[in-house]
Image (cartoon, rainbow, N blue to C red; front, side, top):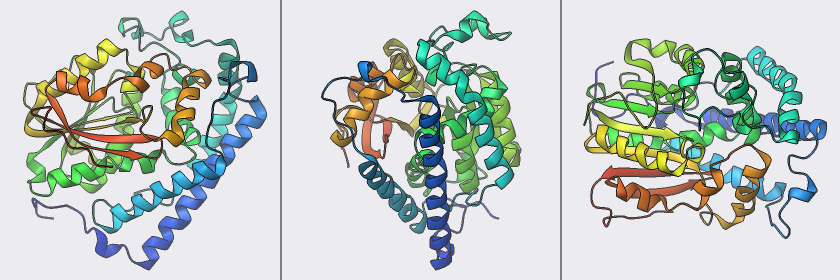
Length: 370
């Protein structure tokens, strides 16, 4: 395949009736599978939030309302595919053996997660730190979501993507794929093989598998603090090993030269950072970004982004160990990014998340699309 400034994949001509049917069937099955596990986990371990800890008068969407929001996300996902922004998911039909094994591992781990939740134990990993983890920042050495080993073991890395899909009822990948749209728009007029992308807090590399499946010649770096998660990222990115690499480093101290990246992506990091660290991370993005480069930022909705979901945002840090989430939910991100020299050029909600596109420039030149 010759390099082209336009997309590297066939795009919408391959999405006909059969493709639409395959997408619909797979996503219905996916949502049923993960929603079912969420319901079964709640039945086994009891409610995530005891009645006495639930804020009085809090209004949250019912299951029908959540499914309506999820359906809108899936419709947008398919519309993006049909428009040629990105391919059908590379694992549209997942391995049955892996799916069953992940579910079994999830339920084997559930009693330990439940124990921590009931006892409000969120820093268990500090008591018995894995070798080499003592030097990691204190804010990072936590059992986020009350998960076993925090982000510090290969067992945790193997479970993580499944746990997140259960949490979001099978919508996590579809939300992540919304971040592919601004990448497509940015690369469509550029020679892809000459561009570089840095994925900050890449975790298991799940998001990068979608990036590389669509732009295999794009030079990509997966950066994360967790050695264990980078082991999993290397495994997931093995098909594109020649044009990708994994680097262990903190987001607030990127080991990269100034103006070296065309695109910086960051998926679900900011809500797990203290406020001061968020500012340092944003400054690092601005430092490593080339002129006319972009940051594609995805994280949780914030209060007011979609009032229907506000009640769930208030419950989330109560139900899960997320010590910095409440502050994140009310922080003025536009002011934060402007302070780092990054202007918000677009912002779009995506179910329980939102995508923001940033670029170096005057923060007064901000537009917002819904």
